Amino acid sequence: MQNYIDPFVRYLYEEAKDQKTITAYRTTVAHFLNWKEERDGNYNIEETRPIDIKEYTSYLKHQCKRKPTTINKYIAALKVFFAFLFAQGMVKNNPMTRIKIETLVHAIGANLTKWLTKEEQDRFISYVQLEPNEFKRLRNLAIIDLMLYSGLRVHEVAALEINDIVAKDKDVQVIIREGKGNKFATVMLVQKHAKNLRKWLRYRKDLEKKIHKESSQLFVSERSPYLSERAIQKMLTKYAQLANMENITPHRFRHSFCKNLASAGTPIEIIRKLARHESIQTTAIYVDSSQEEQVEALRRM
Image (cartoon, rainbow, N blue to C red; front, side, top):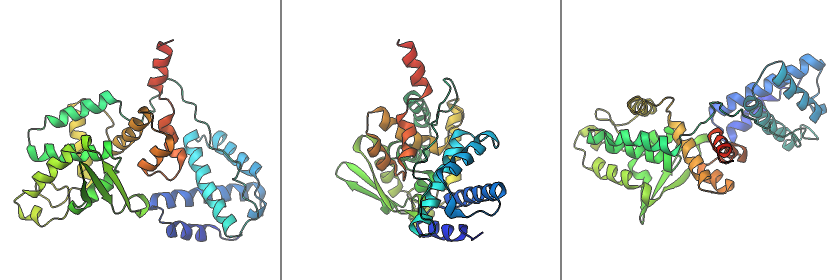
């Protein structure tokens, strides 16, 4: 069979997809093509029909025991793959056009919440505010605010330079030079959430150590001219232990950013743009009610 994977991977690189996405898409397409060949023998990709995709997702569900969330990732990858083939004229019809994402039905009480509740957010921050070391307290509060109120990913926080922070009247503009997929972006930290960042900027400016003066990085450690992603995770783990909270990761603050917007009644398309999601399906999980919200609805009956 003709090699369709290599040109597809080259296309993904040209579209500046991140390495994890490229690897996942390559694995998914190879898995699908192998399944089709093993089932049908000499397989002509132009003959792929929607029924083939449905049978493949059934195979994933029943034989491979894949979860709906995983199947959705397979479907998403195949949608991109066949859209590429169709655009290149390699197939005459796109079999994925009418294939829908799997509906996710969660049992009430399942531990599936990715975000922190408002109470959990406040609890965690209260322990950071108790940090006796002023350097760490101001820096760490600023880091959390960028993730929680602007939706930055941890690698975006670690990569920030001082010049990436631009005052816009009372708000603060944050320049992200290499976001997901190496994409440039700008986000805002509005006035009421920018206080800790402003305090850190003033404190950062007055640092006297040579390693700090010569560093262009926004966030530094006491002994280093930069702060790594690993160091940020260790910092979060420290306060999580103090607050007796589990599974506190940088990305849960980004999830909380999206959920807070949804809880405030923000339209899904605006959440998608603020979170810099490529697909509206990624954003949809924040608009759907959580298990806690479902239980609360039952109690209010």
